[in-house]
Length: 414
Image (tube, rainbow, N blue to C red; front, side, top):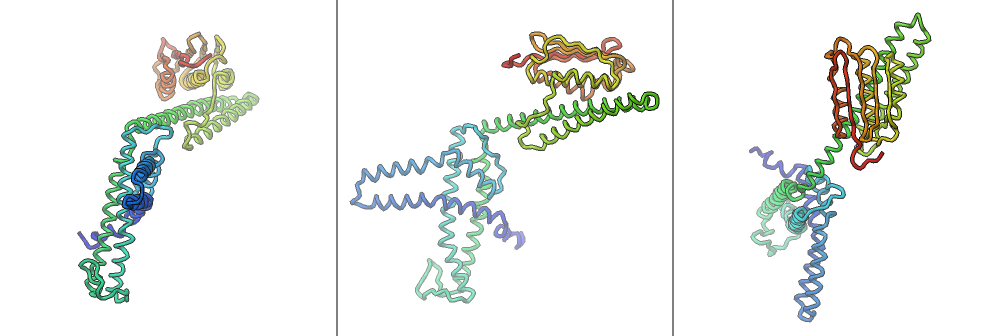
């Protein structure tokens, strides 16, 4: 090991931060030390009524122990460990009840923090100044030490001996603080780390966030994919009829503008939600089957022949079923425009048990043509499965048929 490596623990920034953490424990231990001194004096006083002193001692001990087991004390220790020990500890789960094992581990950590902090604090106000005085004497400064004044085996009258002892004490204090800080950093995850229940709660919260982000990604895929399909078809038709039917071309360009604007609004909104830390609670775009007529009209304006039929009251559906149903119809029409030919038969029914959707169209190049099982179909299947429904999609002769049934979630009302 090089000389630089030997002295590296004394000059690291982490050592100084850990020293502050240990000294903080000494500051917190000071009231306990004062109480101990006061009661030691009271117990040593023969005139003090012993039953009263013992009663006060029990009350004081109870009041002193209670903060050690509080959840707030654990949260403060976690914050201090993260900031000063650079330990990657998760924040306590909000609203989560702390079990007994976690409280005991936290209490042990606080007791160790206060104990080691008290030792470091005592060394800082006693051994550290004395060592500085010895080193100053080695440098030839007049420290005011008298000839017969001794500090154990160290005699200040011999400045070389005292100065070397002072340097040894300073180095020993530095290494002790570095070692205690490293030990605290290694023990913090053990004593302040999350309990099993907290880990499960954190995993569940993370799963909810991931599920919400996946849902937003599906919303973005369906919305933008549909808009691009409509715009592509409209642009192709406008190009073909630009000279012979300029009025149709003008309507097509208007439809492209409106579709693109709606897609940009959805894109900005979803990307904003994905950037936010509270994306789980932020409202997402709520396109529902109430806009089915507008969706079908946009598909028809893009040149897709849609034969639409609705059986039942769509406004009676729960919001989550209506929203997912809208996206399934949107993706089905998008796929039909991309890969199909001829008219699309769309049927939306509201039976007592939930929602039924069926889309049938002829596939360009045969029912097994390319592109029929990509992300769009996977997204529809995910939506249906999340609600506990069923999706059947595949060739039916020379046609492609999609059937989706969505039940009403338990606890939801019509």
